[in-house]
Image (cartoon, rainbow, N blue to C red):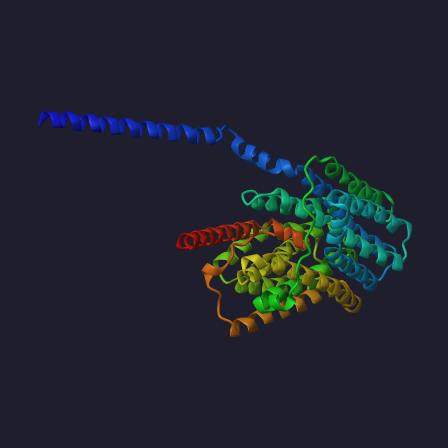
Length: 483
């Protein structure tokens, strides 16, 4: 009996020793794999630096590009108004810009296939830089219409080149973070560019030269990068009928957002000038709209994850109608009161495209995300061109308040369409909704490649293919053994 106790004690001691050693090995391995946490969040900074270093040159070029582009979006309408162009003519300029943007989404892949990403970026940035100077040299309507079209084409191509490169250099673990950084850069640098309008007279040559210099500087980081260029951009398949059948509310949201935001970016500076704002108040008015869209995008998106996205779109549209009506009918608002209304207006209107896209993706198969997003973006671009012209006529008929009266009509129609659709269509199952992801406004279809879910689709397809190969090999072994 005593001998058995001794053997049992020895066995327990050995088991404890082996378990302790295994635990120690696992602990040491975890410590070796986990970076040392120092004060000040150095671990997070180290991870961010390691994640963003491969795309740092692209992001720097994107920041310089967006500063110049943000200044251009504000400068050209203001200069056009000071040169004596009518609201209808300025609206036509905005329309040709968006038509050029849509054309660039279609034509840029052909250029990239021919000369590659770096040369394409250099060609488009140099062209954009030269075109800006031509605006100052030839203040003629037909020339400006042509130049606005080519600027839209150039910036669309630049967006596609950067976004496809970012997608190629990111992984499923880093793509979400890179997309978030890209969104922040786009919005913040656009606001910086808008504020640069205060540096000089909009009719002088200084601001045009500043834009040209910024666009030229954006070439340097891309041309100096040692990273390999990505594969050529593939042509995106377009199936409008399929997307419409998948989500009528989503497509309607892209249309309504295109009409309202296209009109605002083309004629917002003109509205601010006609109500008597000076240059500083004008730039603040435009910037707080962008700021409102940036701040409210994530909270409203998370709200749409918890409730029916159509309800979120409906109530934001109704609130947008109320704010648009206040901006249209309240006379004599001071600059701060106008800024508050504009901030919340941007929070309602500038977030609707992202929610509409999320709603459309809820009903789409994962492999169709890029196709759905491409249709949504192109729909938004086409109706942005249309909205610029229609809103210009509203401003000619009703004065500056016509811009927001047009917004009232568009957002009211969108809210009515949502209400009518919900009466005949059942609520979506909550578990089937895809998590909301912030988007950088209306860029190009290549930004959709940055969605981490596309990587998951590729991995699932690869695993299914490997599993099928295993089944085929096993079937062949069985057949050979039978023979």
